[in-house]
Length: 313
Image 1 (tube, rainbow, N blue to C red):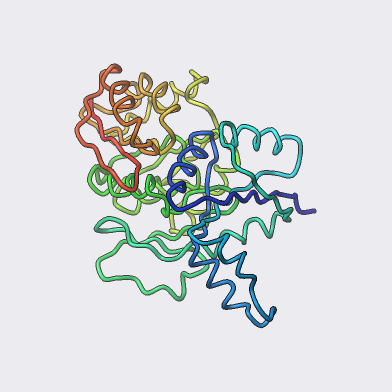
Image 2: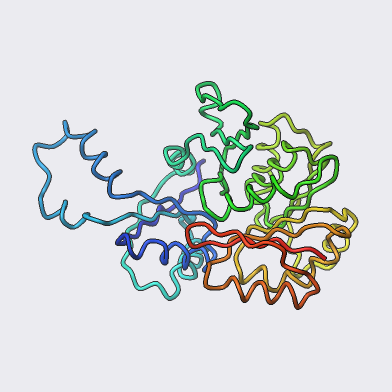
């Protein structure tokens, strides 16, 4: 029997949108979908056969408004998550109950083929036979399944662009907070010999393996684990054996800061630590935490209010 989910929808004016998304992600929301005003009007136009007119008051109400969506399970755990996600956010929301199948497939309309950096071209799995790949691009097939990470968010794009610069062909990569596995798979497609990923969400493990398989990458090339490197010292010791020249963390500032002292144990000599998911107002704070942990920040990338930092020992 399908599990039940709640689709949570908040409306935000265009000038409020970036701040709202940043606060939701900082509160732990693992993935968001955003519908712009133009999409609302396109929806009205495409479905005009179902109504004789649209209330002018509704059109005025939606002027300049975007809809932010995320999902929680429709149970006590989901309600607890929802309360945490909306902490400090004083906006009304609506919720719609969905079956698990509907939840998974409702995301598909937000994902389209996407060029990132100079090399990567991300293709949603359901468009693998129709997408036109630009010449010289390395393809990356993705299906988010029941977790998140498709390359559409600025923080993920910053990490993917960084991977182009810092991946070491023929050497391993370590991805902390791997989610859908998009960063690990991208590193492998760009020449890394092996990828190890870890995430606190057990669902991420299966999805990451599925995305690796979509790209022709077997378990001989990648390993995904469920666990928390901030609380599990035995896991840290296991990951430290990899000694990767590239360690990735596309999470949030509140996780990267306590993670910083752990990174030197995981990073190969002269390797690069690439972290993203940092709101621009907290970039200096994260950089200071990295420096305090013995890492030297060598590059700062910015996009749409988000920051990625590259650091080395």
